[in-house]
Length: 330
Image (cartoon, rainbow, N blue to C red; front, side, top):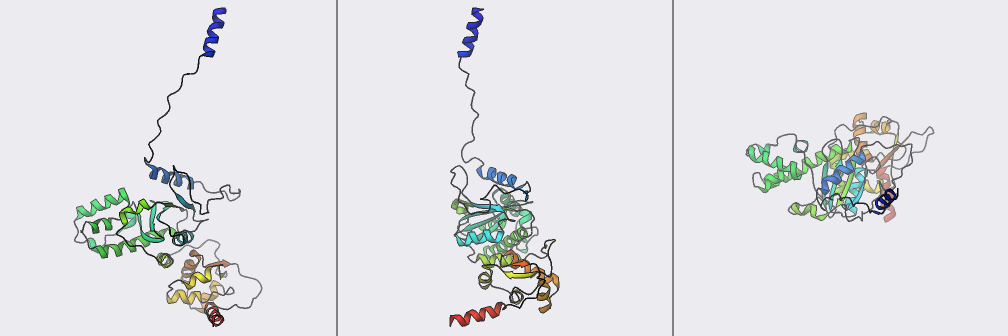
């Protein structure tokens, strides 16, 4: 019995054998892909609108201070943090880095430098350019396939790769890059679930120093909205609803280069006319009116209010307000 008690004491006093620690991955190894997967996985569960949100920073512009993660300047769902607001943040803060949009297809990347848009791309060349441009008619097929495969690996547009190799003319290639980039970005305006994340990192643009940026982000965004052919309206959309300027909408619309149709449509916003009445005044069908309205809604220039049951006096129109402000300046 004594020997048994002694053995138990020896076992109790014996320190535990240290377990071998699992090796940790080296810093910088697959950081970008791991973060992209993490953000995308975080966006999959549908938010429970009946429960109070515990993530107060989802739509705030908050620089990340953790040294082990990328410098994420802002992120959020477009239902809470619209694309137009993300583009304004890039321009107003003169940001440099990449805006990544995660949706049902391959992520879309917008490269920005000092608040200017360099280009838009994706690692899926078929999504980027589903057709065969005429500029590639006399280009070696092997060189084109090699450039497309390189876009799958790096995200660099295959048109830019071919232009740098002098396989195609540079200026037409840059013009096509501008067009396909805007067309690609326009898909996001109507995508149902999009998670956007901006990573501040000047090193990500080290390979595109030879590409000039687009300084006018406002008109660039409007051009992408013009490429949206059939914008889907919410099920609750009511033609009798009344579009009215947001707090900063009137100032924003004055800085845009509007087409004649857009300018006439904007001239009808007075806080009293319904969409149906505006379409009637301009002799537009309701589909065309909705298409024009979609652009102003997406840019947060106007918001629609339900029709009032009581008649209200008409407020001054867009151009009347401009004339009024001109008289005050004299």
